[in-house]
Image (cartoon, rainbow, N blue to C red):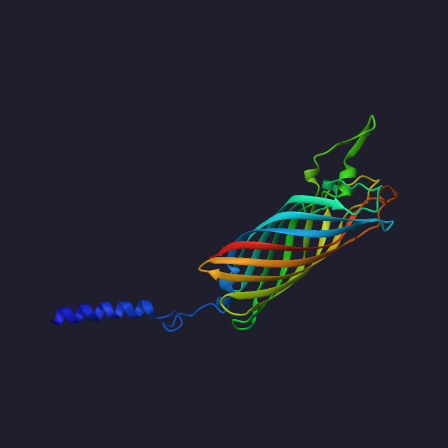
Length: 273
């Protein structure tokens, strides 16, 4: 009888130990644990954007693209936050052009054909489990297939223009600062606003006839995350980007179109971990 009572006591003790929550059992959770449930995730998504291009004569054209996005995000116990984002354009349309003299071929009108960017920052829990503020730095390598870089690699022979270089080597080195404010509504819903200011350094090595296409960039992003089931997470974001050239185009570039601004959205599906 004594052995039976001891055995039952051990079983009950084990059951209670499993049933007790981490907080009740005295386990100390990280200060940002509630946000880790959203920010420790990896995703894949599809998006679209709509942009405007202009030149020195105020002639312009509009374009639209579709792209796939992918990435991974991590909020560490110590507060360090890191996020990698990549994208690849899969569709393009160019229309409403008021500039018949400019190069308007599909490959010449959207720098963001393929982008790779990393953000690293430190998260400050302003309101525990509710409000998180994260300043960060950003570095990246972003495609520079603009009309500037394409024309710089063209040569004319017998009335036919031919590429003289592998233009996939034309890219921007990107760097800048940003800030992110994240508001956790509950265990299911989380919203955030991200603002950064960047500098895109043109690495296409233009000739003396062409000035650099280096530019300043401002990007504002409003997004939401939804932990809908177990580790499954859905996401939605909208963004606005503004670009400004750092220098003035030469006479050979007066008709070339440069990215002015764009708006877009992306829907994602991913897993938390």
